[in-house]
Image (cartoon, rainbow, N blue to C red):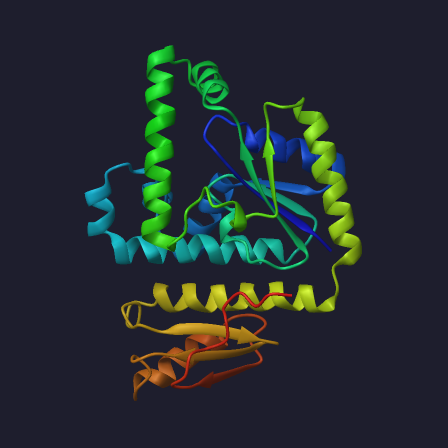
Length: 273
């Protein structure tokens, strides 16, 4: 069992690399755009609302902070559910750093020199050189700010990824073969604990998203953890009669075997294995 999650710098051709890697492995391939569409359908919001993550105005992000966290939870839930199906490559939309650090997942960051990214953007978007440069630098800046605001992480932090590749250093099909070989090695060494950790992460993400989607409890501050199918909920919102409602929502999620409520911190939502 193995999965590959790819995040990319704009203009680094990470989605194209992901598609080539999936073809070489014979695996399924999905883009971040496709996962956003799935999340919109599942949680009953418009795709345009989820695409708000492309807005570039910092003060707008601060105004929509709680709503943005809810939308991010929807995307994470769909992503992790997809990853539990095994043998898939996903690329784009910062998917790698939304993927938990488990041994059955290869988290890849695709980078490229700024000049190469500007040239690629100029060709793909049919922009002038000056407009392409402005576009690339603006997206770099806003992607970093947005990620730090919503997730508390720096997308350029190398420790978030298992592998960082320069897409300008070699032909893309050569790099795709490298990723395919790495995925084969991970698949051979992934054990039951790694699979269980990924399933638990997916369950926790689904429960969290379901709580945020519920109109009566979406504003409650509830932390969600999962271990071996047992979901643990903590937070000030877990008082009668809301605790029964919250637990009831959690029990509707596939894979949940039990629900516990406690005052202490829950296990990490993304248990490592």
